[in-house]
Image (cartoon, rainbow, N blue to C red; front, side, top):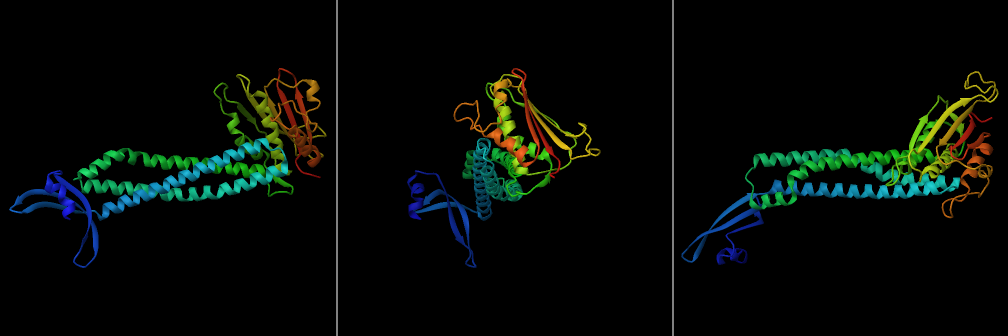
Length: 370
């Protein structure tokens, strides 16, 4: 104690503030903050003025706030890690054209990302409620104990308490928004891959197209030198289509990605249009109910790019044929897509293109397999 009060006795300090532990009559202890000041010396004995504050509740609030801040920071780091992992997965999806590897990769990554995201999402309401309660408790503490020590005032100033109280709910809201976005993307990945559905299944084709567009969203956004690629969807009234969902989604991925490649470095306008409809192969009408045979679901994907010369258009479905630079394409995407539509689904796939007038891919799939 003598060492602690030495600065007061020597005149180096006018006041000392420190924390200590006091003991009650029943033997229990509690933390205190001691404000000690030398009043005068009477003979050889110094006379001190001591103000002792019970800081039990304050320390509890501070400890709880620190714990919640650490928890929010940890969740944010996990969220950022999940985002980076999802971005890497998205790049792999665009580049990987082998159907079996793609399905396994997407389904596995979507599952792995989904678990921590659900953990974060499930805890966000608790973090939001706890943070609000702590802020309310801090506000009550300030109202009922307005006399702040110099140390508390300094701490409030250093941490900018007013800004912290305003910003913390906003941070929680932004984490919630980001988590919802990841959940939507993961759902799109799972809908896109359909790796667990190796058998024929009746599905909504529009969901597959939307999932593909979600995965390719980053490539559709505006770039520093180029505007956004506008996608217009003209969906007709389609029944559920019996197909291999993961394979059909891969067809959409290959064709839409190629359309983006065609207009990616093109100045405005940059536009992709997607049309869906029903066609009866026997009559050519778009009425499924009166079709004597099996109606076809027709998906048309059009871009306003430079178009394809005739001598190249005739070869685009050949394996390993590509006009892209080395490292940009393997020449397998359209070949695999053609095989999926024609061989696996007994459908049709055609390309209509005129240089300077864009390109249109037409996919026709029976609404049910015979």
